[in-house]
Length: 276
Ligand code: UDP
Ligand code: MN
Image 1 (cartoon, rainbow, N blue to C red):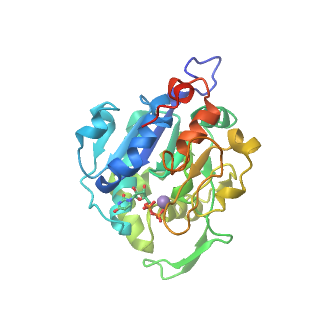
Image 2: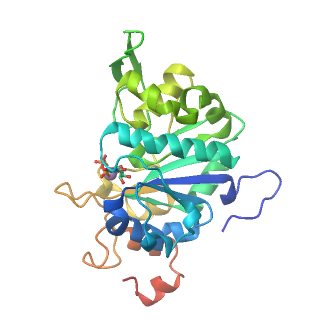
């Protein structure tokens, strides 16, 4: 893996990787992530949840499990509460890149490092993928003005450079993201877009290599898998999963193990097929 720096190139250790989760997903979503991609980036990944859980601590250092004490629900205020803490942890980390993922994301770790090497963390970068084909429109509660801006959907993953994050501090640091979010009454990822696009006038750079379960994941071709940065899954009636051969569906419903072994066929679990 990419841990040794040559010249000034970005390495894995320069990335602060956040995963947002909640207690009810520790088993059903976090275990597969910890066993697959997080195992390649244990020292760089931080899990933001709402309950301490020793099952998680078996697979990652307890200091990387953050009990946000945010409410354990899907209301936008609870989600913004977690994002606000992710942001502050990143600022304190002094790392080059802030990357946020949901607990239904597979992250191509080697791909992400190579991808971020193309961008300068000392410039302003907001990298991600919108889920809408148009800017979102809302009325700002403070100014009463109608505003429109782009945001990267949190469910596909997104990355922000340190230079840009430092400019966001007055609007997003020290818990202020919650206040900012209440001005527009939108969830966490939209609020990040509002801060960057509306308040700081920095554009979203659209990266089509990020994927959430809101897309037609089945259209990704097997030959293109290694070029993608993230994948999602949904096991509800939408059944949005990557179409990839590998482990049987009962063993690997999310397809994340099959993706992992496609990218890293030499791993022990991939050679033996013992993934439990
Ligand atoms: N989430 C959370 N608290 C909740 C429900 C969800 O923090 O009560 C997190 C969840 O772990 C995931 C993200 O919010 O990282 C999105 O949730 P989910 O994938 O269930 O819903 P979606 O918004 O994608 O439909
Ligand atoms: Mn989701």
